[in-house]
Length: 385
Image (cartoon, rainbow, N blue to C red):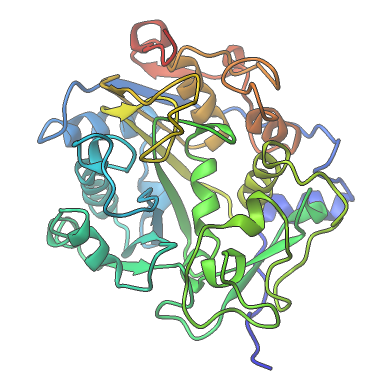
């Protein structure tokens, strides 16, 4: 049998939590406060870069964070690759827009990052990520040339690596004690999540934390994942995570309790928190310049109570803590970040924000978050009318 992981990755905060014996399930740990920057940005184009530079300055600068470091950027290019919302390209509705990605890459390079890797895992193919950009209608050269030593990788499987890398959830995790991931998510010093400002039919919202569901390789967590070993080729949605109808490939960490709830609204928020604890986000960026309501997918059931609308909130949000950043984004969408199951946007799920706060990853309490730049009240764009 092939060996499918190498070593284990644990940061200092996680090690301290694990050493103390604290568990993420049911234990409220001290949630760190971190500033979040908000800026009005009415359109994509050349204006994104100077705004993002100002936002990074408002966060205290990113030089100390990235200088001399390898930076991995998880973007959002959720499948299907060829589907548009109406006739609008996915960059403007449900994907991280290349102008936002490019601005971040440029500023990370100027701040001294030695290597920058743009990452996303497709559930459709093992194409080079550059090719999937072309399928989406964008020339990847604009991003590869935005700084020195910029690379791309499709992380749906092994990619350019030889073995999967295991990341461990300190305290044992809620659903999974760890995950086997593409090497790129562990072989980096700094991890950045660039998400879209989106609602989600399963998790309520899909922001910088929910973006991490896409780091899991489809070869292990997808419809066609191998049972004894990871599949050779990636294919299919990550239903192993969403429904739990089967376990991941036997070589990966298995669920702690296979008798726990199989409800997606229970599972996905908790698995998201496990992923954020195992692969911490150092910088969260949310593209809310243009987006869509109701779903992170390109379509929705015609019988659903709400249908997708294309919207232009005209905002960018960035922070050094994903929980605080997502909390500000939720408020900007017209929701209460302190809400939980039964209250919009969490009508059918538990709040990832609450679970992440209980895990000690960050705070969702706006009273404890310093918002720099545009006040939330001025940036608010209600997603429900």
